[in-house]
Image: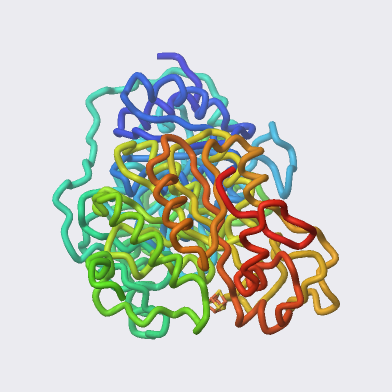
Length: 331
Length: 244
Ligand code: SF4
């Protein structure tokens, strides 16, 4: 199939079981919303265009609690508006997917031009203490596949998951194979108390469970505990640990020409990785011992992989479409 | 606590956090009485609130599905819930600052969409929880923590605002007029489409003590001065109640 990255993302969401979308128009992500408006009714799902991005993510979280896998898509300015409610999603352990098709910023920046300036925003943007999962697709194929994975990890770890795309991948048109035979993690209908914390399954509103859902610090039953340092520590540790301790299961990367002989390593993600791979190949043609580590997940970082890099590497290059954000992880 | 309403309250949540004299406890009771009289199945209802004293009316008190959301945003969460499961009865209860300042955009758009939900505004003309700052509902001239010389701005008439945005059922009651309030709440809860009830509920702690009943048209003075609240042709500084 020959199609656009943003359209592949929408189709991946439908394949993953997404049945609710709320969004607000913003370049360069709007094709995702437009395609969802066409696809969701066919799949017996619900689409709504909200009054702003704050409303979009609010509706997405409400829908998730009502039993629907749900998603929104935006770009930097919209993501800035969503951040408070994304924190609510983390605090209430709400599975949902947020797509950020990055454009040049800060502020309105260059709405139609590619950049990767939001890498740290998705990692640290909402206040407080937490870990985050973010995929970084480099092709139309991955816009499809990683959207599905984003939904699966959202369910597995009960947390908002980012698909951190960019204008180039979002608007890229190329061939992709959209397999219908994909692994999907379904939500268990059997959730019972406790509703929050390690091992708790995602419950659904309207089933007589008398759920107490709050963005305040709460215990396993959702009851507000705003004076207890122990509960605060327990739950922020839980939000971090469920991702940190599973980092090896979550992280995905690809290696090119990376072996005991490699002396120069390029670490890249997103669309930049395509140019990075070409550069490495050109260096190889000229006899240079260059290699590439391509991050399919930017968050969390593949710490164990990074610790076990060959000792032959004397130089690491991190090309990014920003002034240097992810490179700080390797300094 | 009325015995028949105890079943709607979570164990061990009383006493409420409300100050003595606060109207919000009365509104809580009025809403539960409306639900009880209509014999609604509370397990098929979801109660949402934002941030502020009023947001505590359903959460943690109600033994039901409650969602205590971010400041100003309960209507957006409620929209997602109602769209996914239209069989649920969705009720938003929050304060005037939450619903009409930070959340004003969501309020008018939910009314415009005519999405079926009941929004109840516990309106005390002030930000209570954060210490008595001026709100969009504070009458002109009223003193607050951030208008020590008196509020220079005009206030919102929330019923007119929501009606103008397209809501079919709009009413204003007060916690002093319990029978009318319960009637409005019952009508709102049974309404097909978006319904809005503005409930005048006094905050003596933050509004009353600064204005000492000198400020006509405010929540606190309306309750203290019966005539003002029931007036059908409001003069300057009076509040009109009823169904609009
Ligand atoms: S501060 Fe005002 S609104 Fe808040 S509980 Fe006290 S009286 Fe009620």
